[in-house]
Image (cartoon, rainbow, N blue to C red; front, top):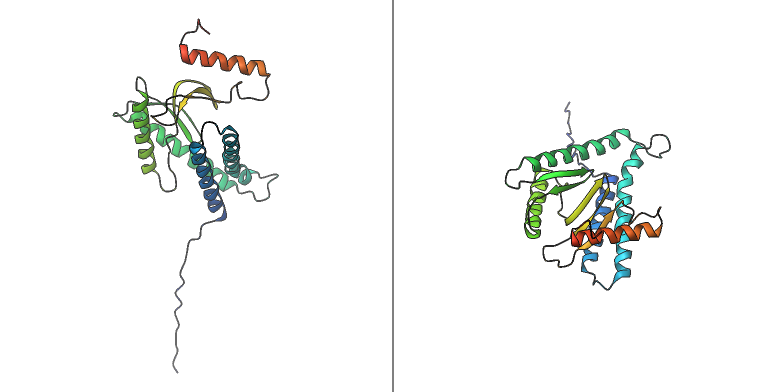
Length: 220
């Protein structure tokens, strides 16, 4: 009697889940939209507002992934473990990046604000060109420390800038060292909030612009 044994080799493949694929497509599309904004002419104000609204919408869609997985009471597909891992990975990555920048002797930089996925790095006494150079070096070094697809991108330089509290700041922003005129960029303050009257927004913006240009409180 002959017994024939057949050995089946099972090839185990690791397939990417729905959420990672979905988020990658959303974030990639947002990067494309932001790049398209930079290519628009200054006169194309309407298209700039449309594209900016689209990239903000894509950002919000990506951000609510945490809420979607953490909603244990009203959520359709809650997964507390996934929600906790999102928070922990983000926090640990940010803490490592902040510590790395603060301890680097060459840059002589200090992180004055870090929240979720962004860092504000103070480069005291540096020129606009030097700030962009150091910023790109920091972004490259932090990206090399983390596994793909985690990466840090150098976005802009604020000069000058007021950093008030969490998610509330304003300044003159430069997106390249060759940019001649700065852009008044405000987040979370009364100049852009919709729950205040128009007079407050206009007076505050005019006062900030005057201070940024003259650097004199008496003028304000």
